Image (cartoon, rainbow, N blue to C red):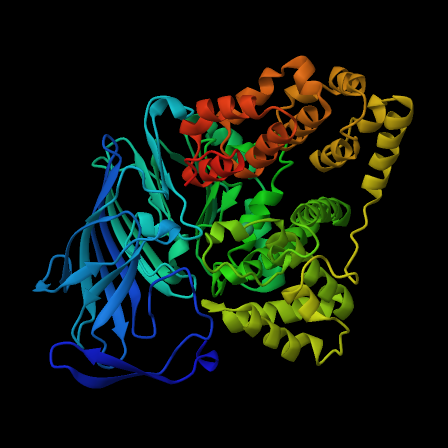
Length: 625
Ligand SMILES: [Zn+2]
């Protein structure tokens, strides 16, 4: 990182004696994070030590956060991000050591950003402590009543930090460009297990007290905690699965290839640097498919299909152990660096394990998603640039297919221009060069020019990819013979109403998704009836297939004629935003806004704030955020 930082001088007015003093510091990031109040060039956190207690009856986390800090010469303040936290007291020194009183101020809060917590320090301060508590509606936290879990007997809590929600449960410098190590002690009710994005206990303690250690430096959005009636099952010496007891066996079956995935990724991009790789399957309200919390991926139970057909998501989260967790986007405007690289690696893992025809189906579906998203945005939308400009907006707005799939397509295009051998060596070296660091799009651009494009004389207009809308014409084209066969089947059905069970009996999830996408929404509703009669798609136990089918059912009017109870059941149970948004949008756009609002009303308690805020905004709910 240091080569991208420049020396700078800051003049501060010291109020006590009105005398101007000079503060000098050596490093200033050239990528300003507009979503954090922190000023790391003056004072930054290097280690966090948490001592927390979890109160399930009042939905409050309380305790102390102690920080090791590094300061510029003569620094007299450190700024943390807070959002809707109660700050009880602040002192200089350790939580349980000699306390030196100090003053602090919580600035005025704005919208999703929260507020700066400014703490006065002295030039030799290297440790500060904050005693605080969260509010019951803290946006990162989802508190589930026993009835919302599989076992129905114990409550459950999980956190979601990305993009800027960690500041709603920990006062922190909440910027992806600032890394620190952490340790924690967490008290939960006895009988429950607590897990973090750190070294984990694997089994319940008698007293409900758990200790955690994360020795590799991470950015704040990767802080994570889950508490519930959770058990562990090993897959290999260094991989395993956590889940509620009733889900554990199915989860372990689905994740059988975890170790093979780690080995495949290591052979491509170098050693896995986080010690263990475990995964927790959360209750259905988890708003994302997965979240790459280091050492412990958080995953939705909607990937448990019973046939290991949706494990690309696990490959994706594992891939983040290199792209995202190890080499991190400097700001949320550079989000594509995390996700584009991760989708690229995900497909390489799937190719290594299951073959090129399998990974090409994923690439084709991804390109379809990207094209649809860009069509929706319009041809000139700046949101389809890879480098985003999210100043003044919630960075969550930038988390759409563009970062993932346009990012993937750029890397795939570079791979095809350079040849795989050269590109693999380049990518491995990139992770080595930037491990445990953050970089901006501009820094990436200069690196890729220097190490790939210029030495190999590649013909690519990077600016068109990074700083212009849409998909550049010269892009890689995934090829799938399997999908060509699906296309033939779909066109026979559309023209002649003919279905042939024998040719679909071995279809994977991806072939089904492609097939459903090919069926025009304006096809007569009798075609939809026939499809459901023959393939029972409304009763699919595969969440991806069911969601795609329900969306088409709404658009075609099949839902209106048949009042599918499966739609309501799915929307009430599942909180994964990727499924919710298209379904609620389809309802809204097809004259079913009243039904959408009614289902949302019922489902809302099961949704994490990330999902309910999105759906609220989509349905035009005036109480949105
Ligand atoms: Zn991702």
